[in-house]
Length: 74
Image 1 (cartoon, one colour):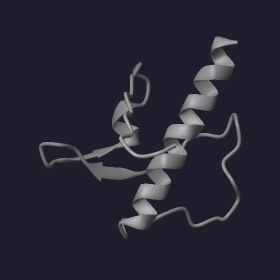
Image 2: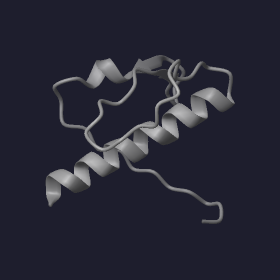
Image 3: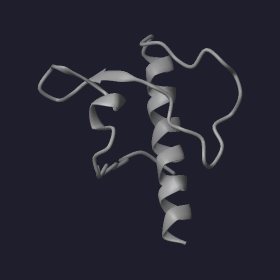
């Protein structure tokens, strides 16, 4: 159960990050296949709050926690 929840959370996070990269012109996925449960998150690099760029691969092999807050509807 927990493994399934973690997989879903990873897919949801990757989807949000991919969508934000595409919307900001930062690049996006080159294939159009939807992300499914069990898929590896697509590679991405984004600036952090202090400015330096951070890649998903920087966290490979580490346990990470992502807190996401949305102030918008829905």
